[in-house]
Image 1 (cartoon, rainbow, N blue to C red):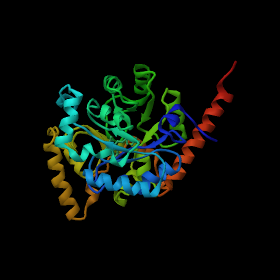
Image 2: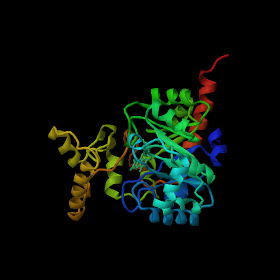
Image 3: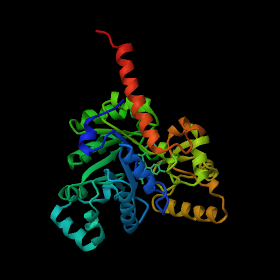
Image 4: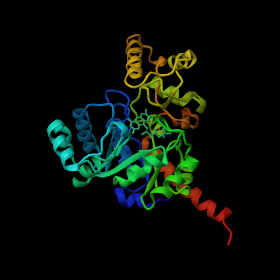
Length: 342
Ligand SMILES: Cc1cc2nc3c(=O)[nH]c(=O)nc-3n(C[C@H](O)[C@H](O)[C@H](O)COP(=O)(O)O)c2cc1C
C-alpha cells in the first residue's frame, strides 16, 4: 500500500517520511551519508544534520550522499536565537554574507534541494534559499514560532512537540499540531516527535500534518552511526529515561538520563546560560571519552525510545520507512471501514 500527501509533490519524494537532521557529534556520525541516502532511496527524505559540523564537512557529506543517491535530500542547520537578530535589510544582509561568510554564500554551489532550520530566525535565510531554488523547512515548538517562520516565507513548518528528542519546547504534539496547522494554513505542516511506526504516522495525518519528521527512530537503524553504547541507551531506555533539561547546553533539550545528568539533576543547581553550561559539559565529555566511559554521557533522544527495543536494533532504514508507510495506510483504511458510519 502507498501513502501520498501534498508534501510528496512539494519535495518531490514518494512517501511523506523524513529522517530528521541530527547534529551532536563533531564528526557528523549521527546522520552518516549511508543513513541519509538509505532513507531517500527508500522514497522518504534523508537529511544531513549540519548543526555540529564545520561547513567544509557539510560539503563533504553532501558529496558523499550524492554518490549514494540521486533522490532529493535535505541539510539541517541551526541559526542564532531570534532575539539576537535585528530586523535585516535583505540586500545589506546579502552583501554582508558575501563578505563575512564566503563559504556560506557559495553553499548552493552544491545545489542542495532542501534546507531545514532547526533553531533560530529564518528571516535572513529564506530569500537567499529561494533565490537559489532551495525549499526551506523550519522547526517550531510553539504557535508563535510557527507563525514567524510562515510570515518569513518558510515553505513547510515542522511542528515539534514536547516528547521529541533534542531541543524541545513544552507543548505536547496532540495540542501543538492542530494549533499550528490552523495558524499557518494553507502552509503544509510536518509532525515531529514521538513517531516510530505507522500508528504515529496515521495519528499525525489525522491531526492535520502532511508528513512526519523522525529522529530517534533512525538513530538505531543499521545505517545509524552512533556509538553502540548510546544505541543501547535508546533500546534499553524507557520513555521516563529521556528527560528534558538544560544541563547539556543551557538550552532545554531531551536526552538520556545518564549518571552525569542525574548528578546535575540532584545537585539542585540550575543550568548555567549558554555557552557556559555547554563548555562545562564539553569538559566532562572529553574526560569520559579519555577514560573510555561514554556510558556516563547521554545521547539526545525522545520519549519514543520507550517504543524502541532490541527488535529495532540494526533494522535497515529502508525497512523502517516501508513499514511506516504500509502500517499507516492499513490503519487509515481499517479505521474508515471499522468506525465511519453514514
Ligand atoms: C541525537 C539527536 C540530535 C539532534 N540534533 C538536532 C540538530 O542538530 N538540529 C535540529 O534541528 N534538530 C536536532 N534534533 C531534533 C530532531 O531533528 C527531531 O526534531 C527530533 O528527533 C524529533 O523527535 P523524535 O526523536 O521523537 O523523533 C536532534 C535529535 C536527536 C535525537
